[in-house]
Length: 260
Length: 231
Image 1 (cartoon, rainbow over the protein chains, first blue to last red):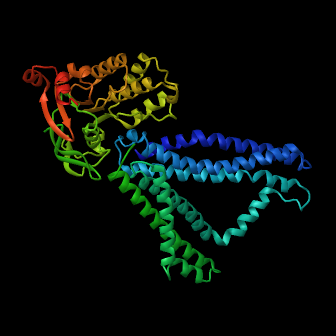
Image 2 (tube, one colour):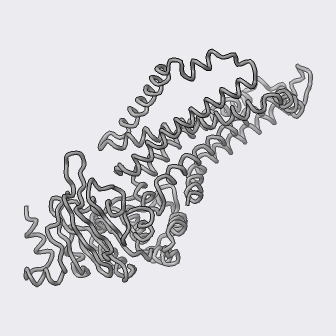
Image 3 (spheres, rainbow over the protein chains, first blue to last red):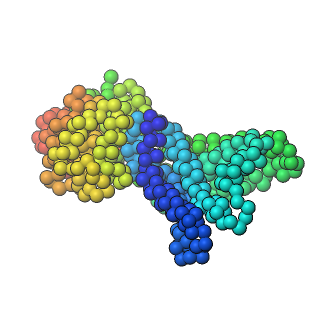
């Protein structure tokens, strides 16, 4: 059931995001061709226009991804579509998980596609002739060699970034779930809940005194091993935050559902 | 064992009491009308049975189970509002139902859509309000469910559409099942009712066999409804 729910959620996101991704790839390819075959066209109107379009699309993909994950949750679960979704023979947990998982997957896709934006500039560097000519492949191979000793840090760092994304998503979901408890002005309620959770997080961090952040701040993080240790601690704290926001969302949607 | 059983069911929204001590026992192979004026608690009762709401106190059992994942497998629910996802096409929505409800008859749904001259490739967003209501009803009635919960299926539609709705319900429901229809438009459905429940201010005024009620009062259910709920 969860996989089917994720499938439909992926489709709902895809019909908006895929065309933007395609536009980014097309703009990046055109700019790459421009840099590759016309290296001296840097100041031309066409190059400037393509660069601006690519920049706008890169910004749009981030904004649209965030907006979509909010709108999909709100409309699909808390709006009228909720009558259909909460009538499916599945648990509330599955409905929430499907939203979280698909949002994370699309967020990762959006980050990856945003990286495509840099490709034409790598080509430009490669063919500019102003610096010592090295291939892109050689550049990447050098990069991977340089990061070899920090494999564990990077792996944990990636996990931490994904966990932070899930944390942000679950906080948004919990805020919307709290907002739907209001009979009217639910969006205002959700915004206020989002602000309140932010204040609560800050208060918790500040009141922790000798807590996590102070401890980490006082440590010598020069050694990779220390960094791994503290990345692990941050990961655990983030996971706890996800659990809290997830539980709040589940409890409200399962016990206090208040569809429009 | 009753198909739906409510025991001392209470639902409060803050200090407002929407349902106040409901006791009901509904058997299968019945078409039951749930009647009452606006605000009498009809929609709240149906939402509690479908577990879109949880009771403040009291208990509901459906086929011996508390409302939840398992009961949703056997209940086909038509809410009183437009719930269609605008981004889907008609075919995609039919496929959605087919993949989530084991008792959904895809062929029947496609046939009924054809009869309504609705193209499967059509975007739901482009359908008129009336057509969207018919699509919702078709999807609900194409399940071979044990219980059909139809919340105000006749509200806000023209007389021709009402006929279509009533015929679609009668032609497609599972006769071994239970149909609970909430409405305040009794005339249109009176002929198909086996039983009727009158709700007033969150309480069951009575729950009777439709023929018995007509015999006792010497009036049609609609006439009696108008008398009981006269302003």
